[in-house]
Figure 1 (cartoon, helix red, strand yellow):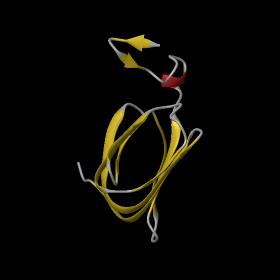
Figure 2: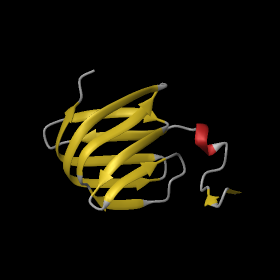
Figure 3: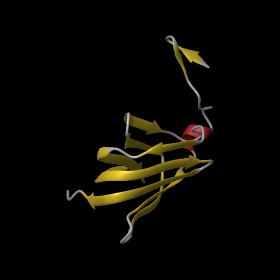
Figure 4: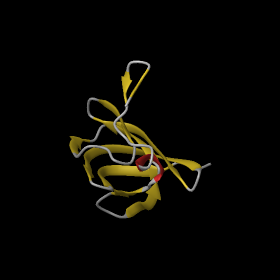
Length: 102
């Protein structure tokens, strides 16, 4: 589907289907939620993840990881590690992470 010169990769039905986001450090599992979208800092810049995203393996950068679950925006800070997108599952294995208060 094309819209104003932008190629959209998701079909309308896919955009409503949540995917599982897991964020873990060596010490603990911080997030395990069904989400509708996520912005994740990769080594080369931020990656926007929507349902139906192509498979991806990337080195994790440093910055704010944000996501939407149950209509609410949530965030945490992550640093170093790996990001994997596979099917309807997104895994962030961070060297360090901390939930933002607020």
